[in-house]
Image 1 (cartoon, one colour):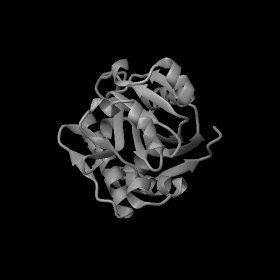
Image 2 (spheres, one colour; image 1 turned 180 degrees about the vertical axis):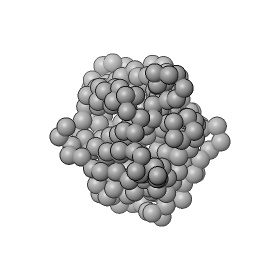
Image 3 (spheres, one colour; image 1 turned 45 degrees about the horizontal axis):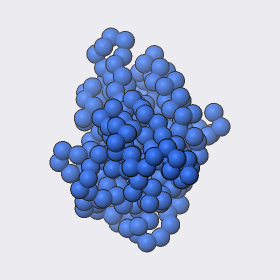
Length: 231
C-alpha cells in the first residue's frame, strides 16, 4: 500500500489571516492528527505584518520598540516553535504542515530537510538555484535566506513519535524593509532576499502555492485534496 493510500492529505488555503487565528487552527489540527495519524493537514496562509519570536530567541532581536511597532502596524507574538525571531507579512507564503512523523522515521531533522527540499525544487522551477548552509535551517540563495523554517514537534500519546506544527515562510514578494527592524533568525552576518528581488518581477501567489504543493507531494510521496479557505 502506498503512502498516498495510507494518508489523508488536505491542503487548506486560508488566504489572508491574522496570525493568532492561524495559530489556534494549528493547535486544533495537532490534536486531530494526534488522534488520527493518517491525517495530514497543510495550511497555506499570508499574514498581516507580524514578528514572531521562537523558543531560541528573545525581544533583544527586535530592534524597534512597542511605539514603533504600532506606528508600522506590526504585531508581535512569542510562540512555541524552534528558532529565533522572524517576520511574516503580505507577499510571503507561509505554510504549516501538521504531520505525524511515524512513517518518516520519526526524525524531525529529516523532516526539516524534506521541507527544504520541496522549496529547493520549487525555486528551481523559476530558474533560481538555492540550497542549504551547514548548521543553519532554511533555504538560501548565496548568503541570503529566501525561506525560513521553524517547527515544533509534539509527542504523541505513546511518547514514541512526533506531530509537527509551525513550518516555513517563503519570501515571494514581501516588503523586505520589515526585516531591517529585526535580527532575522538571530543571524547577524547573512541577508534576506525574495523571489521578486531575484527575478525582477511579480509572481502570482496562487501559482507559487500550487507549484509548492506539487513539490511537497513529490518529496513526501503523498497526494492531497484542496479545501475551501472558508473553514
